[in-house]
Length: 294
Image 1: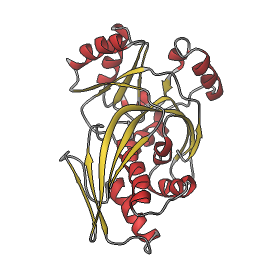
Image 2: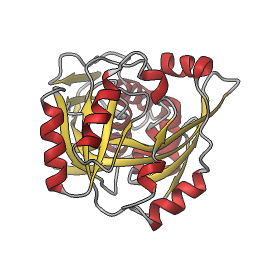
Image 3: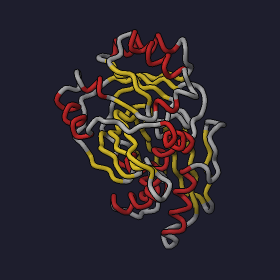
Image 4: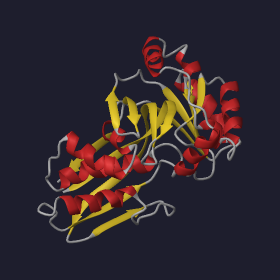
């Protein structure tokens, strides 16, 4: 049996940091949204071991990679079902350490795919338990779509899908340390004053209007001090007609909301002359898509 799974990237339409927790993490409130940019992972059983490879030489294939952590977790949790080993090949399209949950969505794909590959038939709650042990955004990525995410990322409330919307992603060169961004936020950042429920209400009542002005990421002010090009990319996108331009996650990717494919192409053309990694994407209603080949 071979399994090929698409793992979709995510953006944060809204991200507020409420407080630092006693365990060192932060409580957040965020509206996360899956977009069509995706990695593709190939899973196959082997005689023994865990072998992870990638077409991207910059991607770690050791335990720094959440995919390896998930596979090791499965081997320890389900020894009676772990007959042999697994080979996992990651075809990487999502930029690394860019605020798009590239590592988290690959981990979510691994949870769902290994459950099928080893005939475990895990429930969503069982998969979510593994996800919470591995990383903060992994729980969202299991289902993806549109969701309100709270806690350190483990409290996920699914929301109704948004209308298909064109999004241009522009990733400024460089990898951002999420921990360093949050540590810096503790020193200079300020929580948002926007009520998350008001944002959700406006998101469904006026997704083509007022909500664009309410899209916010409180981490942006921190990351922009290290990557001032974020401000320049946002300004250029808005000048070219994007309805909104906001940093995703801890950055340095900026997502630009566009009213049509034509407008997305215009924004893409403007940004591509300034940034290497630019993508035209759209919102999607899922986090993963699995295909089983026997």
